[in-house]
Length: 563
Image 1 (cartoon, rainbow, N blue to C red):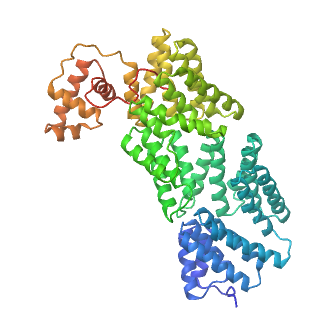
Image 2: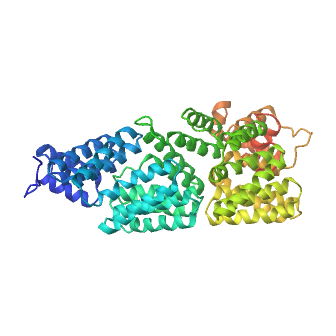
């Protein structure tokens, strides 16, 4: 016999319900668990306990509680409520890669509804896994129909959770069909219900993460950033919430990286790896390690980036374009081109190619292969025009500018690069804006506008220094400084040792400790080095060290401009 709700709840149960209502999930879980030990909970309260466990990231507890609640509702003769529990149990299993178990629970849920023969809203919930399966199978048209049917049933029964899940799913399916504008309208509509608190917390979190993924799928980073900020506010209002699931952490990391908050991006990517690694076999772990590599790469941490890309590769994700760009950063354009070319040849979907083409342009320009660079840039421009995505337009105009500059048409390059800089600024992408401004400085200098070149160079350098983009700073100094003369600058042996350690990224304190001298002495050596070399920054000293072979090849040290 199923337990019934007590007429006079215990203090623990009263506190549990109060905490649940306040979305204090840790308190709710603790108090419901205590109340359950005192007297077995009724199904309604068991369901609340399962929700709290899910939102705390206690996936094993959540699965066990959903199963227990399912059986309690069955015992109470509430088949529809039992089906709802089976649905959420299956969702959790699918997130962890438990496809066979999820399939079993969904099959049971369908049988229960068939046996009951009732017209209920739960039939709409069971359309959702079928729709997701259709997308996985590449049948976005069928998925659109299934999601629409689920949304209609949700509207008929007044179930806002189902409507939000179905509408956003329909939007994702329409994007796959190439109807991006229509799909984005549905994603925004679903988010209205989420941001106004019309849906339950579990649905809100799932829709937040999926909508951000949908925005990134069409390169709408401005929208992705807006919804990521809203997700952060939603999470902050629930301090004990485990921010959200592994896939969502990954999406947040990508947005934070574009915004220039690299330390936060790295933290989110690492947490995504932790969440997706336990239990083993979850989809998305390879992508999370790839993202760790991406953040390390832009920070100039080449060894860490290489290790993260290696892990991604072992888990089944090809580490391009990141690994190819890392090879370019290490000064080996030929190896970078050899890595990116076969991957591009094997990729047919335009949206997927759009993620590879910018790297292909950058690498081909550095290698001096301008026909290949132009072919990639032209295809990128075509895709950008079709999607009408500011991000892709900025990438395409930067690529065009790099090619024009490399081919000796700096005036035309200036126009394309100014367009790129403006668009990057609009979508708040400081690293990409700085890279475009560095190219713009080179184009202005080549076209005779030295004053404009200095202004853009100063702005690019300041932004890169603020971001901590050490490798890009070195490349900038290498590209913009005059070629070194053959005359010796007259550095002493000790000054050469200091330059080597500066190029290795050591601080004055570390240099002093390694050489057995004080920080004050290190600072004096640096002052002399700057004076003799005619420079004014550590990045410039690093570039000089690379060019004079005091350390390995300079990042991007070939004199072709970076794309």
